[in-house]
Length: 99
Image: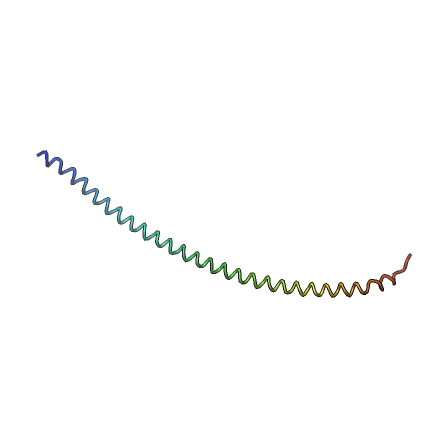
C-alpha cells in the first residue's frame, strides 16, 4: 500500500514532465527556425547593402573625376584669361587720364 502511494505522485509528475518537455522541445525548434530565418534575411540584407555601397562608390568616383576634369578646364581658361589681362594691363593703364 505504501508503494502504491509513492507511485501515483511519480506518475503525475512524470506525465507533466513529458508534456512540458515535448512542449519545450517544440518551442525550442520553432525558435531555432525563426532565428535561422532571421539570420538568413539579415545576411542577405548585408550583402545587398554592400553591393549598393560599392555601386555608390564607383558612381561617386566617376562623378568626382568628371568634376575634376571640368575644374581643370575652367582653371586653364582662367589662366589664359589672366595672361591676356596681364598683357593688356600696361596699355590700359597708360590710356587713363590723370585728373
